[in-house]
Image (cartoon, rainbow, N blue to C red; front, side):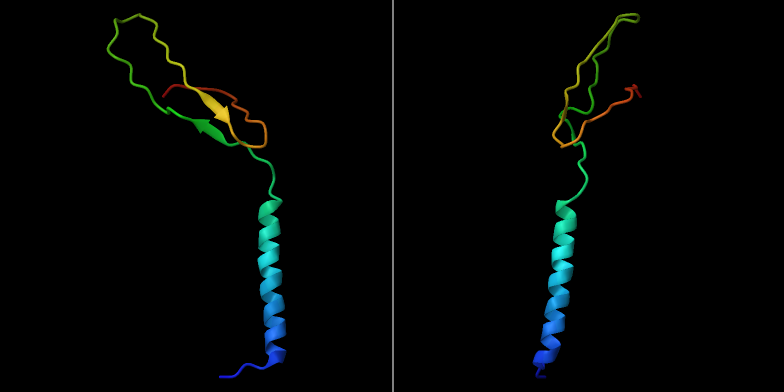
Length: 75
């Protein structure tokens, strides 16, 4: 099947428009935080009842917008 040049030009234009539109929309996305938590859980050893135990989790933001943490709850 031989394609005519008249068909190739609109098809090529359509392809370029779709490709460039998708590319630019991905580049212009809104800034967003990206939370990084290296250790997501910790199991405490058995402790005597009434003893306070603590553990510190490191949380960082590698995104390009502020990271807001409204509250932390244990599960």
